[in-house]
Length: 334
Image (cartoon, rainbow, N blue to C red):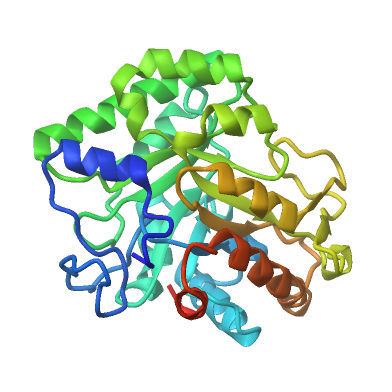
């Protein structure tokens, strides 16, 4: 992992409950924690993913593997840090592609020197139970003991209870195998504090393993109520013209972001400063789906415009690290 950042404490609790020794979650050599580093023939997962980029930042072209390679190249073209840390986008899957084919093909270029912390979907655990079950049966090419987060959307009480059922089922399977699950649900939704607390009561002690994603539009009272379980913080970005010098970011017309209104805006430095209330530094995911008519150059331009603001915000968010260590983390490819 990168200097104890984004280590995903909920999954760490599950690992300890299963009696599994900690291991290094980084493809780089020389773990500063002294943990054993597994042979990185495959991709790494969510723990240790400090920064990641949603592949929907660019319009899909070619096969899932072609798109992954292209996203790496385009990110490297603007000197983006963590260019080999990708959130795969379920919305890019074509009707002719099965779940296993899409996932396995998309992960392939990131094996050995990259990571896939998240597969982001808009799937509802109640309405899309069959599709989620298909994904959970897949075995992504990640290092043994690594876990990929599967983002689902909680849109109703029915989806809350279905998500709880999925989580308990995954835990039971992990217990029976004494092995970390390949997949773990990442929960996100426009729920009130009361609803989140109801889900907590439903899950009881399993709640300690829950992963929750937030973004700049998540109400502060919700973030505070579920802070112990927040492991992912999304950073939405529109066009380069919507990024101001003070860090204010405006969403592009037509861009759909959870809990945000049309052309909503937020202040990135303030958002990252607010994340300091969390007990651990979360994984930061840069996202914001490309519109169909946006070119690769336009999408590179918006990421390039974001990077100085993101770097400045990370300096604040990671300020418990030494300056040299912060620079080392920023420059990692995955």
